[in-house]
Length: 531
Picture 1 (tube, one colour):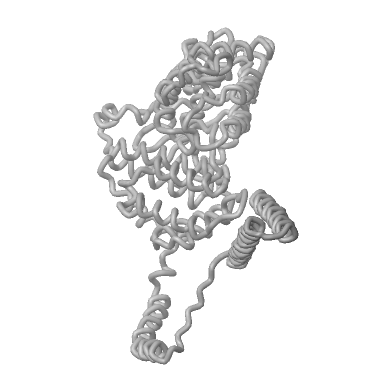
Picture 2 (spheres, rainbow, N blue to C red; picture 1 turned 180 degrees about the vertical axis):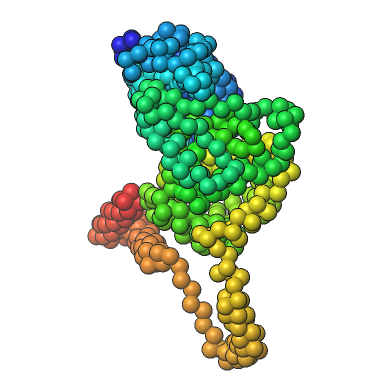
């Protein structure tokens, strides 16, 4: 493995060769967004598996990158080269003290799948049970973490690597580094699979592979082989007799249960990670999972209620509670921007709106008001976009709102009974009737107060005291300025029209005093502007 200095030079040279030459020539022609995105993808491909992994992860970050970057970096999904079987076998031997062909029968040397972190080989147990052996690339952990750290250094030197980015790219890479350390530990993936399996053991629509714990380590994971159709094989799924609309509905419903019932969901449900087998959805690859703490889950419930009821005040308050603020917030402007966002995307119905752009615009609003969304929200938003894209691809005409309405009416945590139960309806109905009966009397009182000049308006303006102080200071300076101007003009007239030397000296004295005071006034004004 190359030294850090050698690898850093290689990274810099590759980026420079694809037009990111600000390192050497400040006057280099600026790239368009399309050129920058394409060249970034080409540079990642040339720099190998670790940078392909970085690019693949960035391709899922619709919350921070423009659609141009997302579309280009998604081409990296199938760019990972395979590595020799001998290297994979050596990794397995180092972990378990025996080769794959000793531990299993009919080991296929050609990988059935290849990724940026690992590749998968087909094999069979002694009893003929088919399994897949997931083997980590040799030295990928050291290389990936090193390359992320070096790329952070490069980003600091080449700010134009990304254009039209919403947030600090260094923060993105630090988040990728943290997530990669989890993905690189296959023991954690095995634990995630078992936890997911436990949540869904009573559900008939979801299936997960069996795992063989005696063949699980940080670098190797063995699980049962399931031969199904992945969600990119639409024609094959249709020819096998499956209803694509039904599959789409099942995907959406299972996701809702994962998020709002379990608080534990598959956070990388791209089409290659979901199979269709015997009428069930088979989730595979549990390297990226989302866990929603109870407090955050309750916030999501409140967020949904605010969206359904079009309560912008509640929506704003929940966002302010969830997010980390990095300064004072003008709540009037923030409320207005949220309302504009709601009207732009949510009035046409959930299924028709562009979730990708909606989340991006929400992130932009948050950035404007110096708010930072927690990782849990960003990850969930990213997953929602993926789920919507998969379901729309399977069933373009599916009515999501009907599924959502069914879910909330059958879910204990999101109960609509508080809006529609008998007691609530009677209480709200009683209030409405009382308000209607009192309306004529209230109107008569209002008109009487108005006619007798007893009507007052209590208007509250945020920070009004500071505004009044500033206004007083401005008026004081204006008055003093007028007086000084009068003194200077008067003293000039006295000096120019004086008939004696004494009057001339008096005029000059007052003129000098006026100039000094005017200079001091100007100095105090400039100093107050810089405070």
